[in-house]
Image (cartoon, rainbow, N blue to C red; front, side, top):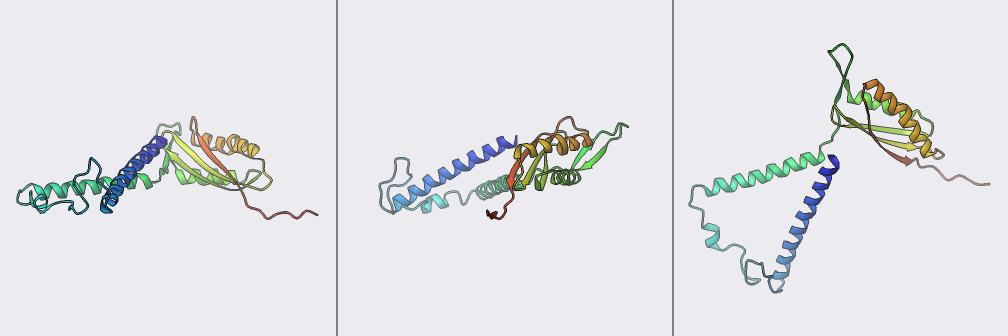
Length: 195
């Protein structure tokens, strides 16, 4: 779902950018004296965008200004909603845990993140670990970043993370599955001196 939303955002931004680039390029070209394109509204570089008659045509009707204000307010609200959806973090605050007594409990997302990060940082070859819990409360996902020590073997470290730290987190939260995206980076180190 997030990948699809990201793809839709990129396509919409690309289309908006192409449209604005085409309109801006056409305005610039006509303003510099190029012949206007066939779809251009005006005949030459000295034409105004809106004539006085076009600007004042609807001024005395009662519906004009409320309609303009409502349309602009709707555009602003849609832009703010899109911006909020794009920058909002998809981080889980808590998870439902089945305790077996029918009442259930809630596990704080940050507690699970910090426990998983601490266990991952204790694995051999891991210099530092960062974990984010995302997705839905019923189907959480882990996004982990592991900074490896200079001499760590990435395959072994990834296997240890999935079979130990991730498995412990899944079992302790009582989850059937806990998919993870793991990014491995190498810790910077000074060049060794060869004698």
